[in-house]
Each structure stands twice: as structure tokens, then as C-alpha cells.
Length: 229
Image (cartoon, rainbow, N blue to C red; front, top):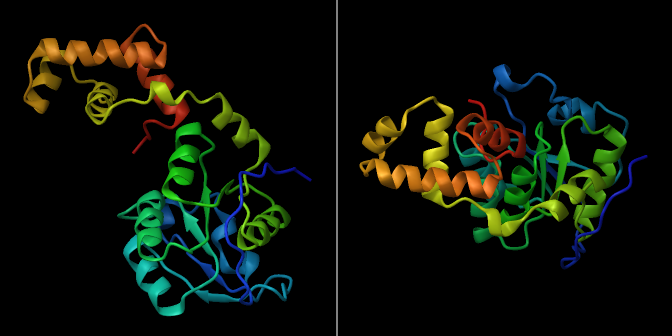
């Protein structure tokens, strides 16, 4: 069984454990995401006396509305939800409910995705390919007030260099580069001079430690800085 890395503590909840399960309902993206099915952890699975599914939601807006209504002790959050993604929903949820406990689930195991989720306030992050037993253990750990992160993902965060974060404008430029736009086209889209675009490209390549546009795009996709739409 895979071990976990503790990333700190938070106030412990004294209430009985309820599970607020957020289900991602987009059939196009549902393949390979069995952990979000009710049968996996709900009443139709092997009984778990300390779990109770009290709500489900199909998108970010609905998730917050359901949370307001049922006040669960734990949220399983899908990183890639329709509309607002799981990071944005987690951030909004914790602004309104600072004590909320969120466990993020994603098909991606990329350092930037994990970083964004934890920075938004999630107490744990798991790949959706995780075995059910590991998921249950993560749920119990997060509900108990601790952080849960598999060691492979913890290692990614340890190797991550915060100083190399791209600025919002550099991210815009990089996204346009990934779509195949030329320097002239990027300058036109952003309403700036070509020399400014070239300056951003230079910074991007230095931060990503690459020497060309193709390498920059590949590195950004591998690290989770960019996502394939």
C-alpha cells in the first residue's frame, strides 16, 4: 500500500463524518474516473460506517450551492469541473467556509496542478487512478485535520522551484505560442509590440530552461502549466 506524506495539520472536526461527494457529470471526460462514481464509495459499495454521502454536484456553482445547504465535513473535489475548475471552486468555498475540508481528485499528476490545488486550500490531492482503499484512507486523514499527499506528488512539489513561476502575461504568451501563433500574431492579439513579445519569450524559455518554442510548449504541458483543451 502506498505511503503518504504529511504536510501539516488543521483543526480537528468533532462532528460525525459526512461525505459530500462532488460528481463530475461530463460524459466526454468521465472515462478513467471511477473514483467519482457513487457506487465506489457510496451505499452500493462495501459499507463504510463513518461515511455518509449527503450531496452531489455536477459543476462548480452547484458545488458551492450544495455545500451551503448541507454543510458537509468533507468535500471530494474534481479538479476539472465544467465552468469553474476545482481550484477556483475550492478557493471560493474556503473564502466563505474557512473550515471546509477539501480533497482534490484529478487525472493529472503534474506539479503545477498539485501546487495550485494546495495553494487554493485543498488539504489533499489524489490521482483518480488511486485504489479505493487509498482513497478511503485519504478521506479519513483529511477529515481528521491532516494533509494527504502521495509521496510521488510530494517529491514533485519538493523539486518545484517557486522562483520560476511564470507571470500572468507570460502565461498568455505561452498559451498563444502553444496554439502556433507567430510573434507578430501574438503581438496583435495582446496589443503590444513585437519586441515586448520577444522579451516575454526570452523570460519564458529561461524560466522553463528550454531553448525553443516547441520545447517550451512541451515542458509546460508536462508540468501542468498548460493543459490540452
